[in-house]
Image 1: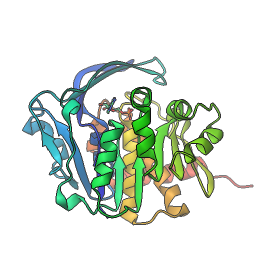
Image 2: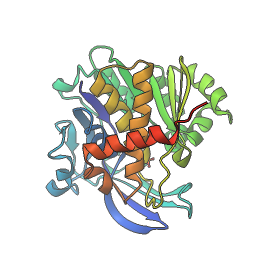
Image 3: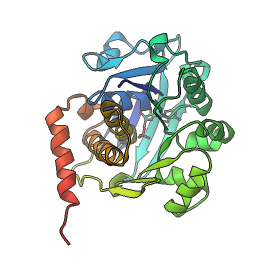
Image 4: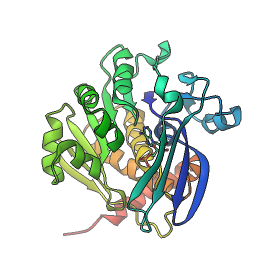
Length: 302
Ligand code: AMP
């Protein structure tokens, strides 16, 4: 089943101990769509400026990604720059320029309005809400990602949008910030009162946690010898997670668990190289091999 995503399509500046990129294609919706397209058909809603060339757009070509919903405006693309610490676990945002995003009013192409799976990637919460309201019937699964930038600036809008979603997919520090709870299980209880019935907590090199009515499920991160750039790993995780669910058309406990594994797989590939470089040249058999690797990593006998 097809999957709708709205979020940023951007240029990023990235500094990590392994190198530096002044301007590389990024954005939450970019990473999400590239990742999810290995599992299902993706409809992309976003906005780019006139600095986004036909050559840049090639990144979406030859994949199961429909870009009818990618609006072009005069001005510059969203630009974000960040720097990672020595161990890649911390990141400081150096620049956030909204540019064309500042005047964005997303409109869904008619063919996207009956989407059954929806991912509201990192973008202003009122825009996430506006996209969701344009979907005609209640989708099977609506998931949302956000970040400290929006939690700090637009908390009321975020709380309004959270009322209408099923799964919140955020990292551990955002979970704590949103709930004012340090303990992640207590934080989950707090977040369930805001609307979502499931919470996926991305914990970088410590793996990911799913908390929902079935209980708690953990997936370890894939230990990597040479991680280079964590940018977009969270969005690629979300793309693998939602892409798997939409591809299967089911979201019972067994499918949610497998979705967590495929999310972890896609995030792990993303950090291997700068920007989306590794993500764009993945082979399906590499994806499944890594999922089997995760199974082995955590299997034991009692
Ligand atoms: P992640 O590493 O998963 O947090 O995602 C990084 C991506 O999010 C980058 O490619 C950025 O372009 C994008 N990004 C950073 N800040 C924002 C923001 N405030 N709103 C939307 N997208 C953002």
